Image (cartoon, rainbow, N blue to C red; front, side, top):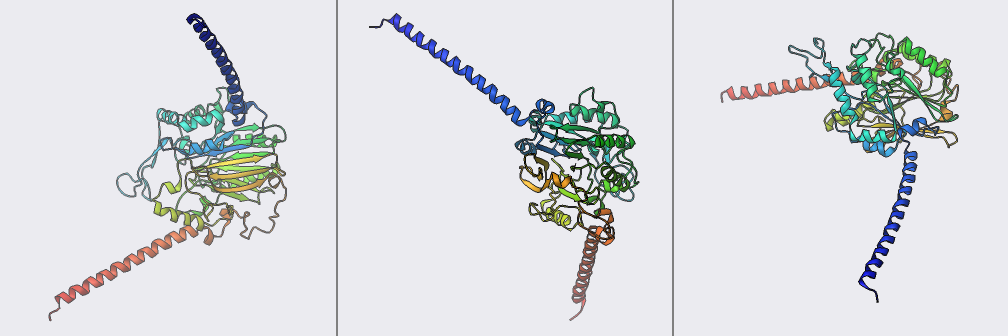
Length: 479
């Protein structure tokens, strides 16, 4: 028979054993959690571990044109891609404000009688608040926990739409952008003129060199055929490329290097591109060719749509330009839904020898005009090594894609372009070299449509006037 005291002691003994077992279970769970936590962090490569590691870089995401005040659901898709590296390509915030477009009145912001600028730069204090808003977007905060973030700028985060070296606020803008990117205080980018820099990722034999260009700080006015990079940056770029032993060279330009868009929408609109500086682009091609740089892929933003371009006749091996724009700003988001079809038709009508067309394109134009981000997946274990380039939508689904082999990018004399100067050849004719009747087909179609519409309207008004006159005549005519 067990007394009440013995019962109490027995229960206490059982309870003590249960507590010891619970602590043991908790202890082992804690060890397991710590182990899984390390494995998870290694799998997703957080910023510090990846920056210091010699693991190969296999997953890169990039994007541009992100208005800090706009909804940004796209970060969920970027997080789902699990990039090791994210690259800002410019317009990382929109720091300038825009007046309404007015052709008439006291303040005219557009047209031949324009007398005031349409865009107004923000103050340094206003820009700092904008960057603070951008850095605290929940999805972006999560991304910084699992990926290294680097970047360059374009015009709107530089401070003013389409601005170049003449912009007076560029030094203050440079400091704020580098603060946003959490650039170390002893970085050369803190003291040099411009935000250009480079990074080397991966072990020997599997290296990727990321070159971030600055297309703003030293840029001359468009259509002057002046400079984009400036002499100091040109010398730096030559040294970076001549000393490189990397297998892949990822060159980030905030504006398109190979796209046809800027040349073919004139004189309707002005778009920025390396094609507006033909001597500068030729200098870039000559430098890459002279240094025998291989494994080159350009990435770019700015234009508010995504596309993939290719040019075979510059350096002996193909060049690709993967454009992703934008994270919040996109052409089809700025027009009524019924006009989206017209914008897609215009993209299809646009003459291009550079754009990559394939069955993976969501639309026949192989242009994607909605919110998007770019990705590169590098399979170092494949033979040959493959790079899968994509432009993805806000849900992370593929809108455009292209498989590129490293062997293709490293092949010399890919195409003999001798004798092709007078022929329009796919992936070998620059947009500025297209015949006028082809290059300006968009403008011709637009002005023809406007003219036809005006003629139809005049005829309709004339017919209405004649009909009204006849009815009035019948009423006045006596029986």
